Image (cartoon, rainbow, N blue to C red; front, side):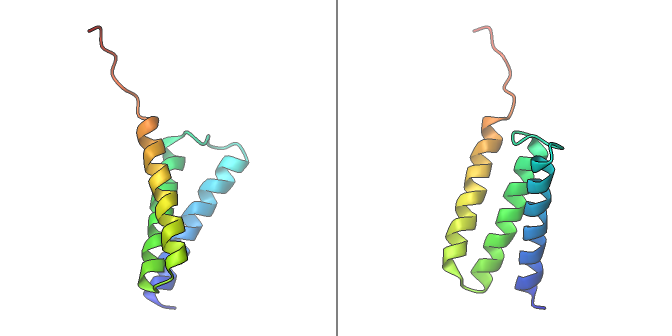
Length: 83
């Protein structure tokens, strides 16, 4: 098993674990753990796809990670201001 295979397998396991936890109601889709799992898992899958030069998956995983990053910032609590 190559390094790219190990990285991809780790990323897929992280993504699937988050997916199943969400599917069975253990975590919500706006939970930080779920969102971070998507960022990390998709990032690892993107990295491994770059390593093997499989560019359709580079695009897919980069977009997946990017959407998860946007979602993370969307769900970060903001301080309230009385200005």
